[in-house]
Length: 328
Ligand code: NAD
Image (cartoon, rainbow, N blue to C red; front, top):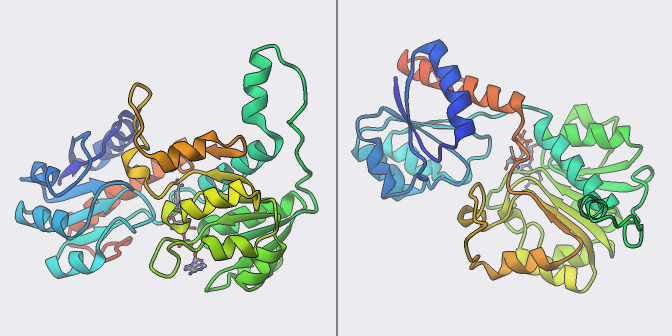
């Protein structure tokens, strides 16, 4: 089956090409993001493969339909970048990779928590400059601290398990409780979670119910000096409210792997470019903010699995089988 792969980076090409060989799919790679304009490049392809910051709103889907695309294979778990209603109306099937590594994002979340708490990012620079002083590097024991985990699905459950291993008290909130977590922490309502947690970490999807879950009001409910961590989706957090929380010290530290306007920044080398996003630039000025550019998923195992499941979706579609990982 012929598939046009958008937002293709060298690492995507490496893993997807390897997986495609095993099932004879023909992939063509486009570095450009998928958008209403670039969708024309998919002419002659039955499928497109897209990533988290590709635009899959109605006008892009209409352009894809016009050039004959019948399947969108998302090589990610989240699908907030896609208009599902439009895809259904246009008769375009959509598949995703719901769980490529249960560990990759959870482990990165802990990497952020530990780095931010023990100031590893600062220590690394200091030691390289022969500054062996400890002033400003003090952290706290994770053991015995209370951590609030919002969303206990595939990733959240692994975060809970790891935190339990560290000896943390884990508070959890989810619209659907998971039996796997019951012995590792305590489910509670959001107000209690915000009020009692030393660290709040987000693992729920971005949808209309969760957009700006972290806003001025919820920040005021948190413990002064709370550490906030978001490795889920940028839109869960009102960045302006968080900047205000950092300025007033209500938020003690912030770790982000995602950012609501990341589409204009992440995955690109912009080191020679003037950044026009003043909100993001303000975030970078805080000494207690640690940001990675949507790399939590990025492990060898996850990339293998993403490529394998994406090829499986193409095969199932080509053979008229029902898609194991369809979302519409
Ligand atoms: P999942 O579907 O397994 O789990 C999501 C959980 O959130 C479910 O238990 C669900 O019941 C819960 N939930 C839904 N609505 C909620 C609400 N309003 N409040 C609280 N909980 C709610 O998904 P997952 O695989 O664990 O992934 C979680 C999120 O992580 C994804 O939606 C995606 O946005 C993000 N993600 C980020 C990266 C990265 O590289 N940074 C990689 C993969 C996924």
